[in-house]
Image (cartoon, rainbow, N blue to C red; front, top):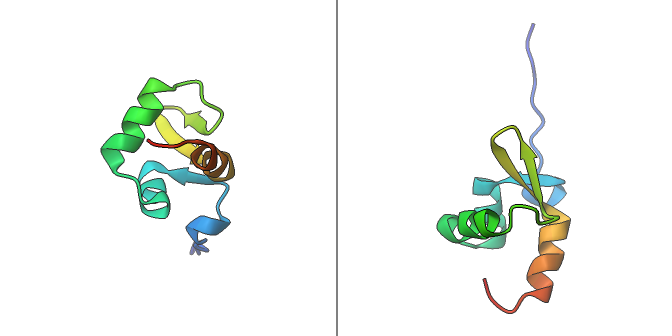
Length: 69
Protein backbone atom coordinates (compact mmCIF):
# COMPACT_ATOMS: atom_id res chain seq x y z
CA UNK A 1 0.00 0.00 0.00
CA UNK A 2 1.52 3.28 -1.11
CA UNK A 3 0.73 6.42 0.83
CA UNK A 4 0.91 9.64 -1.13
CA UNK A 5 1.46 12.90 0.67
CA UNK A 6 0.11 16.16 -0.61
CA UNK A 7 2.36 18.96 0.51
CA UNK A 8 0.78 22.29 1.33
CA UNK A 9 2.53 25.62 1.25
CA UNK A 10 2.99 27.21 4.67
CA UNK A 11 0.52 29.93 3.70
CA UNK A 12 -2.16 27.25 3.24
CA UNK A 13 -1.59 25.44 6.53
CA UNK A 14 -3.60 26.12 9.67
CA UNK A 15 -0.75 25.13 12.01
CA UNK A 16 2.99 25.40 11.48
CA UNK A 17 5.83 23.56 13.18
CA UNK A 18 8.52 25.69 14.78
CA UNK A 19 10.81 25.20 11.78
CA UNK A 20 8.05 26.11 9.32
CA UNK A 21 7.10 29.18 11.38
CA UNK A 22 10.75 30.29 11.48
CA UNK A 23 10.89 30.26 7.68
CA UNK A 24 7.40 31.68 7.13
CA UNK A 25 7.67 34.57 9.60
CA UNK A 26 11.43 35.16 9.18
CA UNK A 27 12.00 34.96 12.95
CA UNK A 28 14.98 33.19 14.51
CA UNK A 29 14.30 29.78 16.02
CA UNK A 30 15.72 30.78 19.42
CA UNK A 31 13.52 33.88 19.52
CA UNK A 32 10.41 31.91 18.57
CA UNK A 33 11.11 29.18 21.14
CA UNK A 34 11.73 31.85 23.79
CA UNK A 35 8.45 33.55 22.87
CA UNK A 36 6.61 30.23 23.25
CA UNK A 37 8.36 29.44 26.56
CA UNK A 38 7.52 32.88 27.99
CA UNK A 39 3.86 32.70 26.85
CA UNK A 40 2.83 29.04 27.26
CA UNK A 41 -0.90 29.84 27.32
CA UNK A 42 -0.91 32.15 24.28
CA UNK A 43 -3.76 31.59 21.83
CA UNK A 44 -1.35 31.02 18.93
CA UNK A 45 0.27 27.94 20.55
CA UNK A 46 -1.08 24.42 20.10
CA UNK A 47 0.62 21.62 22.01
CA UNK A 48 0.25 18.12 20.57
CA UNK A 49 1.96 16.02 23.21
CA UNK A 50 5.43 17.57 23.39
CA UNK A 51 5.20 18.99 19.87
CA UNK A 52 4.73 22.74 19.57
CA UNK A 53 2.59 24.02 16.72
CA UNK A 54 1.96 27.66 15.86
CA UNK A 55 -1.53 28.65 14.74
CA UNK A 56 -0.58 30.66 11.67
CA UNK A 57 -3.46 33.15 11.41
CA UNK A 58 -3.54 33.92 15.13
CA UNK A 59 0.24 34.38 15.20
CA UNK A 60 -0.01 36.69 12.18
CA UNK A 61 -2.47 38.85 14.17
CA UNK A 62 -0.13 38.78 17.17
CA UNK A 63 2.77 40.00 15.02
CA UNK A 64 0.61 42.74 13.48
CA UNK A 65 -0.22 44.05 16.96
CA UNK A 66 3.30 43.67 18.39
CA UNK A 67 5.99 46.30 18.02
CA UNK A 68 8.94 43.95 18.60
CA UNK A 69 9.76 40.34 19.35
